Image (cartoon, rainbow, N blue to C red; front, side, top):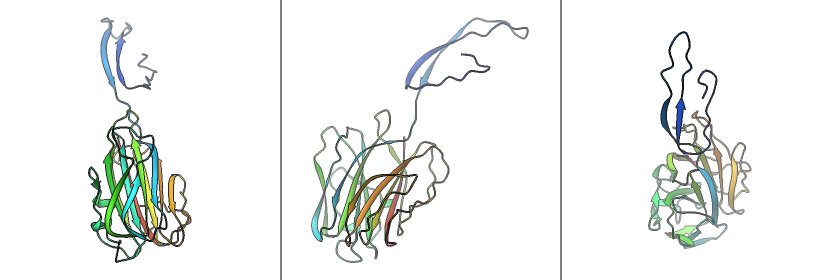
Length: 251
């Protein structure tokens, strides 16, 4: 290591032993080499694994069965977002939904009650080594529900954490400020009229489900490299009526 002009870059997590030997100059004498051990932890934005969808024009039903995404591993973070295009009334109130065992509601990313332009529910679950093929979400009467499930994992195989989350009654994501420089931004949009939504740059589209005139849902994400506030992002092709969820994931 040349401390006057060098920069050590680590590409793999673990430990390494460094021996430093200062050269003798007129200012100080060489006291011999010094050896020390460094523990390296690499932090990068949580990575997208895969996704699944359910719904897409089904008029009504008591249960919504959402497949588990393929290719997941134990420790992956699963995020389920259910959107109902039904207005105030049957199927439009997230508080009527019974979550599957092992799932946890994200209250800040869930409508507190029925909404005129559709309500949205967000829940999370840490994958185990023996995940079922699907999970069933139960309500008194779902109506025009579209849903997505997203899987994320840290680069070292550990489980990402939810940094922040929010929902609002527009087709533009909420403005959130990440607590790290390596968060992953997840945006999910529910369109009340079933518009054919698509992701807006710089986000990457992960999945879409729905059809006119029923509800539709789009999921997109972005790997952040700064802790600066993330501006709101509007889904392309939206009808102007709907709901959105914004989630920041961190290591």
